[in-house]
Image 1 (spheres, rainbow, N blue to C red):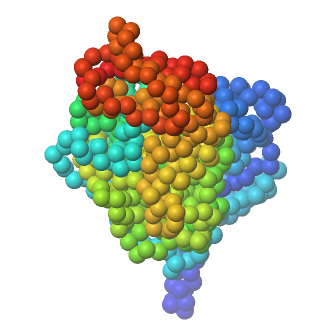
Image 2: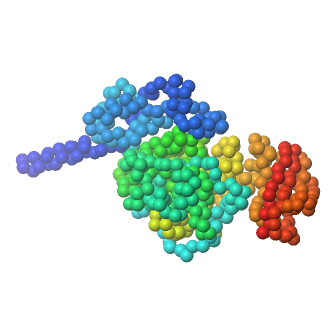
Image 3: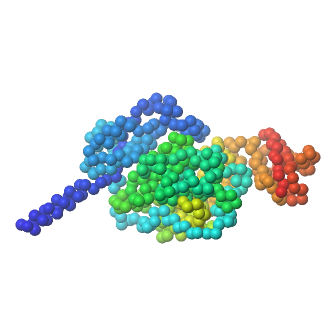
Length: 539
């Protein structure tokens, strides 16, 4: 009898313990408040910059842009055993924690449409093994000179866009990551601060404005540095003159599904602020609790909550750039969410010589499109860490922002072209574009090729002509002449004397200045669409 009592007691403890397991779930609401009026008065729910971006690309403002009913959220917080962790206007849902019983009891509320538990995943036997370091970042102290930073820029021919003065000016990038410690004090970001290009941020994990604190994880600042850091004569990020919002969505202590909800909430905030580009060097596949794990077949561009959110962000006119992941060692399909979404730009990693790194995650037929999309340097990429040191780092965490910054520069040149067209031309410029695969995607893009190809689009401003480099030493190149049937070029001295005069019918012209004296010259270019005059400095 004693043994039976003990067994019964243990069984009761087991059942009690099971009942107390805290679940992660999304609760979807039936409706939203005042939808018609909100859409009719978009400035009540979106910034003017966000409205302008949507109008520019012909994107409708719809019910998804209307905030969640706060009265519903307040009422949910009063329910027994329920903690509200995050909210999503795009999904019209909130992320909650509670026992399965308490969460299911929410179905009795009239405003709850349905509930989606995060645990409904296939058993962990089909998991791809997780890394002991969730970011797979390795700092390698190096003796830095400009050559190290140049490789990751020149590999994608971004230096040629910089020479044309496309450095991200006027574009806004939102970085969704972990902490950004010391960005507000390090000299590597003084250019950003002095130009008022740090627009703000938010810590969605702690629900605070603490995103600069020195005690925070430094992954976010390392990612940001590849785009935004500037050290005179030593380091230039890919978009040093873009503006930035910094959002913490990653809880580095744990790995739980609520981080997906933080991510989506941050993406919604970015959209409402009129952000042009999102970079996120984060990926979700397996969690601390294996019940929540995804399987390779669920990396299908539509299953993961964060993937669905990223897809909506892209639909809203944001160019979303995501690291492909760092689990490519076994060459299995290891792309993680939200990089599996069809209309986001997923970035793999190559070494300095252009060969794929062994860790770069691999796509598969599970995704609705070729993944990764393109590649950039992620093997010993150059970055600035939280201590202000220039170091090398491994990870698609860095190849992704390198591309995101480059995209901002390209978008600066073509502010009225849709993100879809920008993505298409970048893919077409890749060195593997003729035979894209699951290892390299479309390969390493050439941003100057993409720029040149976009110049010939029908919707491009045909009057825009660029001259680079300027100042020059031996040669200058003119681009942007594609759509003119007749072009004349005159080069004048500072005294007005004509030095050179000829007609051209080519889309790109290279002029030899090697025999000219050092000084100032004027270049007058006449096309069917107007006349441009440039000051040329000869070194």
